[in-house]
Length: 263
Image (cartoon, rainbow, N blue to C red; front, side, top):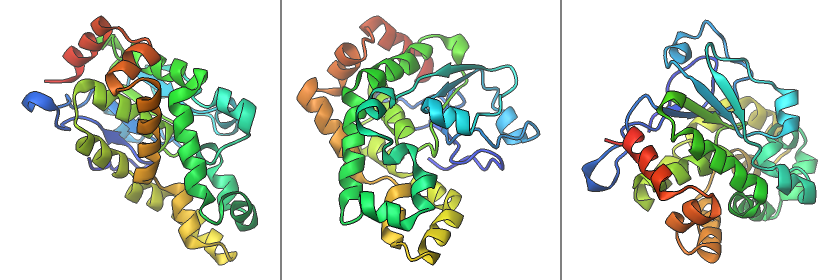
């Protein structure tokens, strides 16, 4: 799924045309994902042409305060703070502190060096499945998609890779995409986030930071998604039961989402 070449929004993508079971595809122009909208330019015709009606912001309160989104014309905002519970017990995880860590190689090495970066992200991805705030947030995201009037809908976090990546995974699984398609879509963001964070990575390495650690912080890896899948399997047995029991999305709501977003 190639990135949409917007000048003021990073990692902007349309989930449309991705293949689903039974020869169906995701309808284009209905659901988009991106990084945060703090640099959105109202004159960026690529973005305004999408006609976004709903923005689902998956960031923390701190992130929203530090870098508030610029509003899209004629759109409403739904705040869905995925990490609220996780932050309360564990402090700020790597998914929500990218720029802080990349500005301080010593801090990054202290907290995430020696292979700890993978374990930290895997723990965060498990929280996407297990925590109350994450379940409420992803339920709110899917609930918006039961209403055709809410689309075109754009969902995002900070870099548009972790919280946003799991939201895309949940939606595509619900629509009937196989795991290979979901995994490829999940990993497809890596070139875009590497480009977006290239100046920070260069500064990080110039200060003596490990470039591999920097790339692990800004990117996504198959192991992160595998950790979330494992948490789903342990708690619910399947993605279908996770959506129904964990997120509280009924079969009727699921069918409404499928009818609107697939063809």
